[in-house]
Amino acid sequence: MKKIALITGATSGLGKAIALRLAKEGYDVIITGRRRERLEELEKEIEVKYESRVYSLCFDVRKYNEAEQAISSLPSDWKTIDILVNNAGLAVGLSSIHEGEVDDWERMIDTNIKGLLYMTRIVSPIMVEQKSGHIVNIGSIAGKAVYPNGAVYCATKYAVNALHQGMRMDLLPYNIRVTQICPGAVETEFSLVRFKGNQNRADKVYEGYENLNADDIAEAVYYAVSQPAHVNIQDMLVMPTAQATGNMFHKEEKK
Ligand code: NDP
Ligand code: 8X3
Image 1 (cartoon, rainbow, N blue to C red):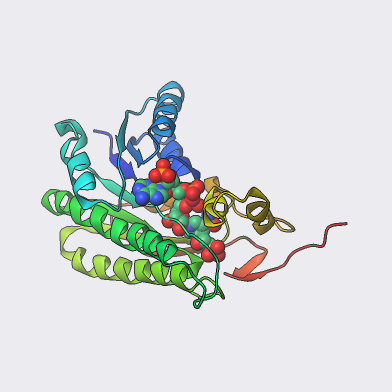
Image 2: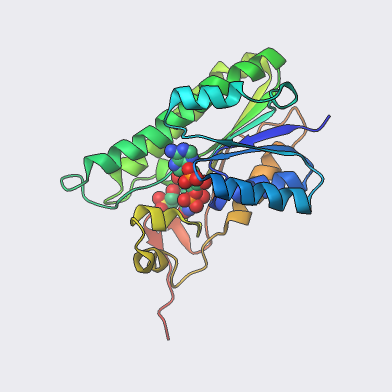
């Protein structure tokens, strides 16, 4: 039987690329996000391109009850989830700690920490019962090194780093692999969301150097999940060649 992978935040960016890559490689995929029409489009794209089955779940990872109901609603032949990719997440705002907007902080904490925790709490018992599974947590360079004006986003990704290490330990007896993949700058809708729809500001993040693209991270996820059963890729930091840490880039001047 084909393996089933559930990817949170598959309506855009990394999640969409991971869903497409895993479907291409023969995994059945459960795609999730809040934007229903995007889920429908991706569902069609996967059905047209690949032999894999696809199933959409539209819900907000910040709402435990919604997430639990969504997973409970899966037909029995979709419930045996083999891979959970905890990808849904966001940065909102880029400002000094004394000027940050509390609502932005709540959104980041609720999505990146609590959403990831909720999904793990709901799906990991299925894996424990199966005595097999693989959880892939999408962390960040921001969870390894703090940068100015990004304290709260970085704190959420440091929390992901800690939760990742903890779940690796707690799930060790159950033959469940746990991988963290930490990207540097990837051009997705990430900066558009961070700058609240300001496309000019978002574009500037990716100027003057070659950023990663979502397919680079999908490749890393596929590498991790396709290893032999005795191999656990525990932590992977994937950076653009032109980026050393969160706020240190080698940018070429425009001629
Ligand atoms: P995008 O904005 O392109 O995609 C984010 C995805 O998360 C969307 O599919 C969105 O779906 C989903 N999402 C956000 N909030 C919620 C929510 N409350 N409930 C359900 N789904 C939600 O950004 P990326 O693809 O870049 O980001 C994916 C992950 O990668 C994030 O965890 C981010 O922190 C991390 N990351 C990104 C990097 C980058 O440079 N781009 C670098 C390092 C890590 P919808 O809006 O439909 O709900
Ligand atoms: C996103 C990457 O460097 O903008 O997690 O924080 S960065």
